[in-house]
Length: 425
Image (cartoon, rainbow, N blue to C red; front, side, top):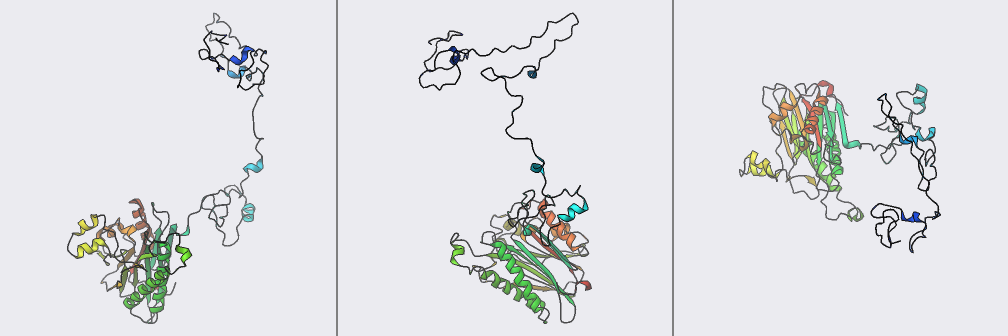
């Protein structure tokens, strides 16, 4: 063909449809051109005509003509054959496809729930509250990934409480804490809290903080009951924590072959021991301790000095505190626990407060949002001595509301130690 049989538009040799009117050239009865696929249709067969229902003329009643819907006309394929009434590629859903592995706790009977009670020690999904969590950390019922154990931790004893949270930006919690109480030789109580912040630029920072808190707590519980002065016991606990973190660097070559240039595991350290008369703190790095008296008319105080670039600039008189902490190098630490740390004598201090109050020890994930002692006192609830856990939760919430850029960990210790704080935990 040289022209379209419908509109007589000139055609190209390879045209299968008219470029002007869209006429299907394969319906002309001519054999397919060389190189064109055979459609399988009889070229002489005329396509089936489709007759649409005709709307009746308007009558004198002025009523609108009836509307014809697409369903009024049976569909046909390109050859004019009728289409099936419905098309499905799968069968109707069975009850088994939508059966929930665990019973719905809102509608299940006590017998059904009892039959699904997991064995002791089995974790239930935090999302559906019904499925069991597999060893990979996913729910076997709904598939929801479970939060890691250290993403959010809370602990409370009679006279101390601590809370730790991953924060809103980090993919894991690299902080760690430990709280406990021990009996002194005279029968009075000593309350202990340790907070360690893993150094993110080092390898295995979460392991470093955990090892440090455990080692320091064990050392304090060995030294305090045998009559070691709490300040000396604190010094020994920091040394023990440093040794525990140093030991993490002694790993096989195969464990470091993929990241040979990373720094050794490292963390910062802050701890406090509170007795009926003394308040002792010890630290390495930029984790801090604050004193907040119950009488908020009395001044609050920061009990530690950071091992950081900003603190060095201020102590050397080179910059004001505001200028130093506004610098981008402000949080570069100059002291830490780890195999590649500088030689640094552990910092310890002993205080004898003349009034009741609380000690707040925390990682920089909190004090970045309440840096001065006065700011910390304003955020801390006034009933902190009576409700240390609630107070710790409020402080962590303050950091998260402020942006939660880092892991957040805080411990709250009332001073003096209540008599109910005696014992060991």
